[in-house]
Image 1 (cartoon, one colour):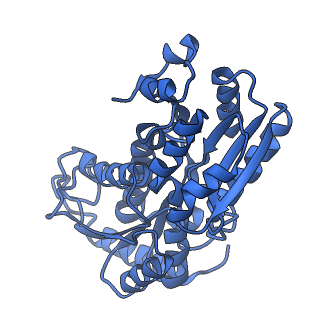
Image 2 (cartoon, one colour):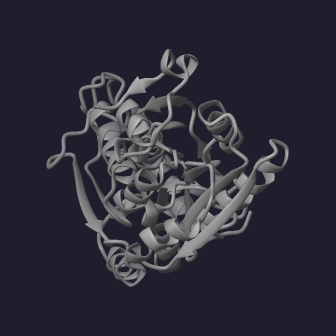
Image 3 (cartoon, one colour):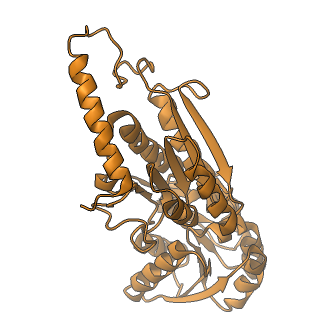
Length: 340
């Protein structure tokens, strides 16, 4: 394992902590420690956490909220034992870089980066404090970690890789004659390129052709959706730019009576018909639990494997289905949560 600056610092801290533990060995069991066995926050070390979120949309907002909730569930009290400095880059990479540079010189104990571009900016700028990411599809492809099993540096986190083959099969359930599926995605998002490649690979075994169009700004979404042409359905990956502008895509799809399937529930709330996707609140909580292991237990990000979503669930939007001229099969409805 390579010795990163954070790793060397972490080893030094462990040594100091060990010496302190010997000094305090004679203390009674009533003394407070670094754990939270009682769940009431007693003995928790106060911490500061910087959060860099790429853009506001339901999935990323839920991930951030879930991350913060993990601290509350562990007994932290916001404003007293934990402070969150939440910054939003408004989908501008230059802003994400500036946020990361500011966090690099801050007194934050840990940084959370929400979405791949925000994580890439943080990884470049911050070398001497732990970084966690969430809502990152492929951390290896994004060059954030050496491997999912052993990240190797001061950064690790959680992946939002969707069950793409199962989602394509769901499209076939909703649109039985679907042969062409369109995908609009941002050409600058590594996470989207990974998903499109995975969708193309999965589609080969299902007799589906994937038709793609790329965008560079949210203003391009409607035109790119029109340019997909005669597709039988549209699949929306966890693409931050497209999801943040989902209303433009949905409007074109409704006008052309093309069913839209999303990779996650926020897209369904935004007007897609259905998903078998990730619960981003739970994914954020997973990431928060990793943060607590680092901050309170001294866990080393270099040795903490990247974690993946533990659960997938059906979410449906029957009103959207009606507007797009299809009916959601009963076998999906019976297992699904319905959006309001």
